[in-house]
Length: 314
Ligand SMILES: [Zn+2]
Ligand SMILES: [Zn+2]
Image 1 (cartoon, rainbow, N blue to C red):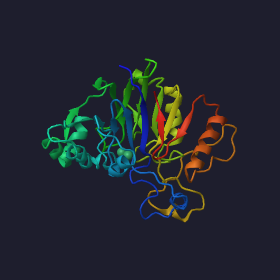
Image 2 (cartoon, rainbow, N blue to C red):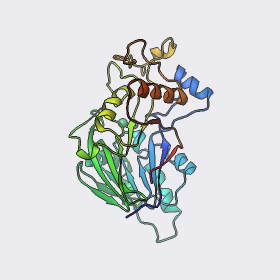
Image 3 (cartoon, rainbow, N blue to C red):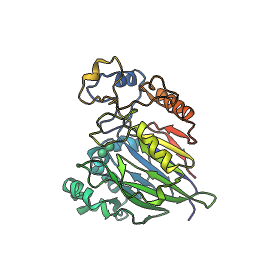
Image 4 (cartoon, helix red, strand yellow):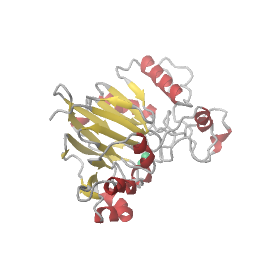
């Protein structure tokens, strides 16, 4: 099965509350507002012959309005945190606008533990035929149209026992198989499957730039993600998503906010010297990442994703 086209659309690239965050006047949010930048809740769309939505947070209606598709063939849910599923009711639109008798429920793939939480709120979507629940198990292979995927178990703290990442396989125009890995929110991977190695594309969380002294919410920083990028060795491109505003910025009075974290050992050039400064907006993020890639001579292309960005994977 060959996909004529396969586009990856970054519907949202922000953390759990999006940035700039409501009520926040930290240096990062202030700078982003001045530049009219925003990162909505994290969601992805693989569009082609098969349209696959990955996560479905509270911004999904505006995200899909800005990046429309006629139908959604399936939804992968990474875990049971609100920013990854609270928009599921908006999928009703795809049923409501379909000619009578033509709609088939949207298959929603997620772990049983994730459905325990999500089903207590959105069970009616299954009962009314908007969605069809497909419980997945880490390590098993699933097929959806022209795509295949394998969930893998991730560690993302006690309130997300059902969290998984996904390895998605598809065929390119030339017939070759390619793999895309989406880690979602995580701090580590349990029993990493072999298919995680050398994926063509990796989408990885960078909630902070510097790893915090206490990683209590069990998220991935850019600094820590470098270990995983080095280990998994993505062949073509790595995309950073789920960016937050919780890094402390030197001199910012907002550093006293509860969400702001002290770095553990801030990422610094290999030759020593001052740590890399915390990026305040998109261009600074990409410049800092490029500098780290050069300084550490990393043989990887790392792109800081932004909302609405598209990548042609075919
Ligand atoms: Zn999240
Ligand atoms: Zn989460």
